Image 1 (cartoon, rainbow, N blue to C red):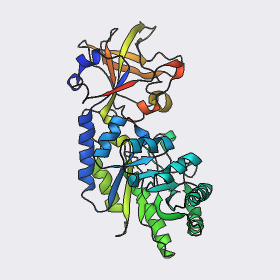
Image 2 (image 1 turned 30 degrees about the vertical axis):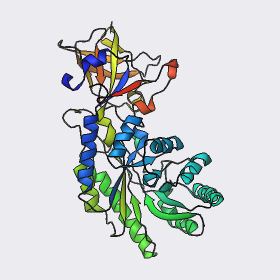
Image 3 (image 1 turned 120 degrees about the horizontal axis):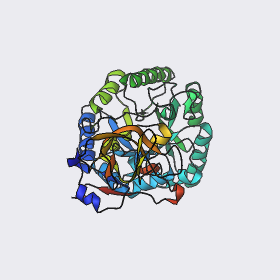
Image 4 (image 1 turned 120 degrees about the vertical axis):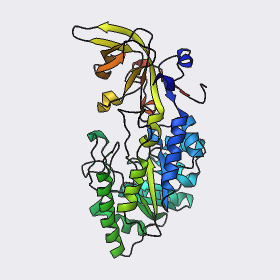
Length: 386
């Protein structure tokens, strides 16, 4: 495992920092493109919220993916990375006027609309510019997902989307507005989903809604099923690339896509997660009453997922050949929640060792903060450290 990291180069860098293996990223993108090519009318957008590192965005854009954005800042990042505006979709439950104006001024492909008030504001701002904005309606399908409660999004109790009961009314309202063009339906049920049955349930719900619309002679050109495919946090070396074959095949088998329709996906975590690691240095090894603490220079400010979601990240001491011992691995932040893992087995730890927190390429660097007046972590790619 140590061989996958340029350890001597790491020793020259100030920790903590994010390291991205671009070979893993490019292999992941190649797999996505291979699997998508098996089906007609499948189109993949990268969910920028997972990681907006400009170096990674460039590689993703070069692979031909579009961009799924949830803020004006992400739209700017996508445009700066060279994503064509006609391949950018803009979602989000609370779009500010300036963000909508940014999308309109750059002629992005579509706004994924989440409420009637938002639809009316988009129409108003588009009218001022003499433009017609493409809109898809994010429908909340009330489909649960086998994932953490904080990252499920498709239940009626969640803040996202328009209820199924309101779908017809919203479409009727849009048909009477002059500056919006209804082109599709958008769905997203959650993140880190490994049970394909969750996606089958979504397909069944979409099929029901499509039949209902066709009974009203309403044609929908675009169906967007969001993302949600999870990754193997426990075995990043054994399974660096998610099961894209099963993911796309599930939709091909269960979603009754019409011949004129394009099916859009918005994959984020599944694209970048396994290529990234947070590299941290051991500051101290502290002997507690009943346990040992490995105190790192990285904390919840650099990788908040364990504190926020109780998320697991595989940890490796990449500079030690000593026998395995058990530690609570913690950071320096003045919060009791600043813990990366309890009872973690690591090769014997000493001051100065480098610890790799794996599978950190999604929702790691992008969620970093300056709490405790800490500096944001730097990032490096394998291309740069060869």
